[in-house]
Length: 206
Image (tube, rainbow, N blue to C red; front, side, top):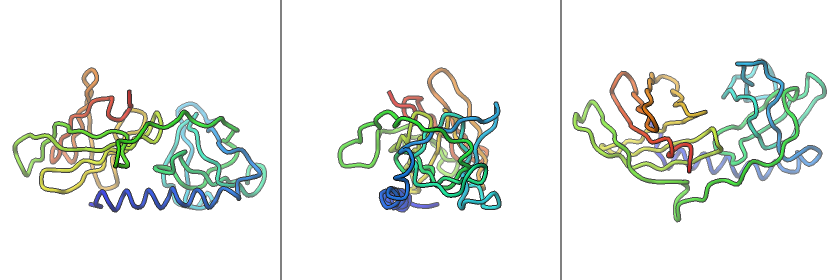
């Protein structure tokens, strides 16, 4: 499992790359919004401007993206994009599903001296430790629908939980189920090896 420092370092490197790409995007808008998708479908973000390139993430209608430059025309037009903060989405998408957009609302303020929008503790339990306890966490809210929660486990390991549109996203090689009661969501990892109880406000913000 990657350490929190390694993950945050990778995020900051991604953010630095955005600044270098701004000149390439000068001929287009600063921001795009995803539009024109069929109901229930999503837009593939790929590692390269090609339909044969691996898909890194799928995004929904209305997602706001930073424009890093486009190439090609018509249905062959590809645009390099990133999430407004450069924290979660980075890659190439078909330009056929992009329309000019206004900037997203201002991001949450950070907790002083940290890269997080909020910090605190949450109820957690690990099968290998038996007893339930409180785990410290820090959350980075990318936008209204995407957040990354970094959790410090009792044995010092780290767990990253990504929430998209109010639901946790299972990383590769991990099984994940969840249930929601009022404003609390319980996330169960690998059949009960890890359990976390998280308030909506953690990933949604105030």
